Length: 301
Image (cartoon, rainbow, N blue to C red; front, side, top):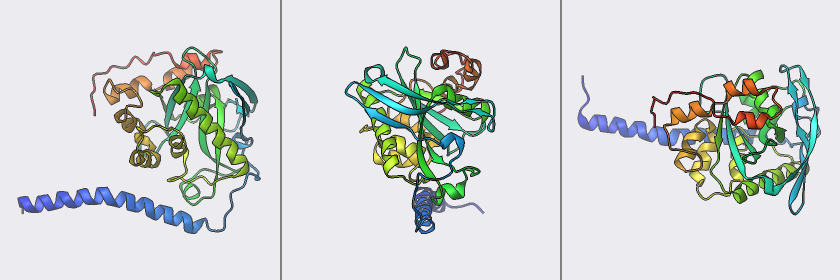
């Protein structure tokens, strides 16, 4: 038995309403659950942290430069075999004039959820630093859906070299990693960097819980953009479902949108080139060679 036109219209309306309201309802219910489950818990910096989250960065700000302590520069042979090392970096603010967004997907399949990071440097330089907002894990503790939603994990800003961060995710964890240059002025880039580093300093005094749907990697990066182009509604959706952050940022004009999205993703995937750059002294410059060799015959919105 076929539906009449009015019945089909009603069904379409129902599906549209469910799509528009059930997802936000699910998110609100998740927030409520977090609040109930985390009552009485107090965030702390004094725990037996895992190796990669053991030290927090701290930045001293000067008129024309910044000094960052505890810039992570690990060498990764495997998840369990790591050569730990930290650097202290002094950076002239005038040398920072571009930022790149990294979007990381576990495995090769794209999904709603992803990890995002920002990297800062100069167009011709090789001293990029990467900022990754993560759930700070204790020794022997794993990142999981339950502890990420219920406030079992603290928040940490990891400031690291690109070699450390990109090599870990592409070569060791075998995540799929995309790099998108951000369309911003040098002053906007420097403002974004200093805002993130100031928040990283604040965490020394006022630790926070990581929240998968509210206080996560992407929402923290967006909070410091200062761009009127990123409207509150866009921040909400990107922060909750960062797997589609490239699509939304294209529409907002914050990353390049002159070619089909599938072609852009192919060109911006850096896994193949990251494998060839592992032991290069000019690691960041090597990553920015456009050697994807992708055929752009597929067009998708």
